Structures are given as C-alpha cells and as structure tokens.
Length: 166
Image 1 (cartoon, rainbow, N blue to C red):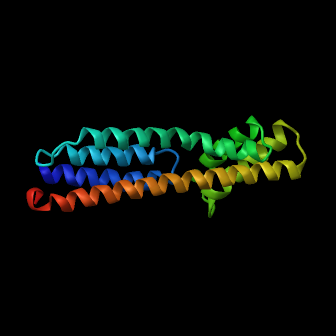
Image 2 (cartoon, helix red, strand yellow):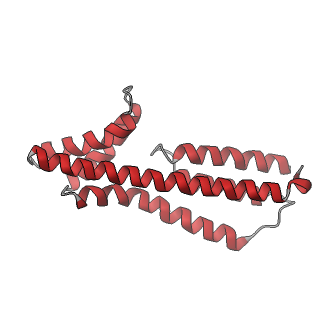
Image 3 (cartoon, rainbow, N blue to C red):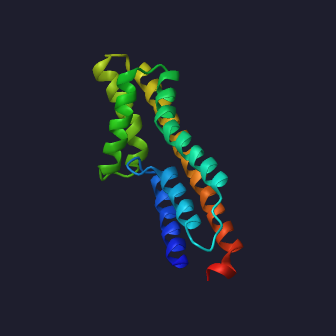
C-alpha cells in the first residue's frame, strides 16, 4: 500500500512539472496532490501544518498564474484585448504544430488582439505583446520552480522514510 502512494505521488509530481509549462494542467496544485498522496501513506506521519502551508502556496501560485501575464500586458500598454489574445494565443500555440508555438502563441495573440480590437499602432501592439510574453515567461518560471521545490520535498521525505516504506 505504501509503495502505491509513493508511486502515485511521484506520478503526480511529474505531471505537475509538465503542467507548469502547459496551461491546461494546473502544475503546482497537481504537484501538491503528489505531496498529499505521499503523506497518505500509513507509515508516514501526516503533517497538517506542512500540507496546509504547501497547499496555500499552491493556491496562491495558481491564482498568480492568471494574473502575471495580464499584469505584463497592462504594464507595457496593453488592454483587455491583449490579455485575451495572450490566453487564446497560448492555447493555439500549444495545439498548433509549429516550433516554439507555446512561446510564440502568447506574443502573437496579444499582438493580434491589440491590432484587431483596439486598432492600435503596430509599435504599441508589439510593446503590449512583449509585456505579455514577459509575463508568460515569468509565470511559467515561477510554476516550474515551485514544482521542483515540491519534488525536492517529496524526494527528501521518501528518503527520510525509505527504511519504513520499502
């Protein structure tokens, strides 16, 4: 039973790391579920404080994931059309079979959103698109680092209890 929880937790950790790059998967919350799965193992003492703190961090990062790209777009002069374009471009970038679609999608989406809906000048639209891109990269980096920290905590706990678990 313990090995099942460890394997399930590890799979959730890996899915969480992948989810830090893909917007369709909530990376940090999935990694947090991996920690919860590990702590559900009967041989590991459940630490409510640890689970609550890491869960709160996961929720905050999940919310920030939606706010940071919008802040980047707004900071560089973009509008709501640019923010929506960023999100649509990100989804299209994942689906589209073009190289670096996940990076180009948010940029092109913000640019097209600004150009079509706000009829802004191309230099303003490019600036807003750049802000969107910076926000997306910052958000992705933040999620990736958090999932790596959760993975590190998971591995540490597994090695701490390896004699009991295996």
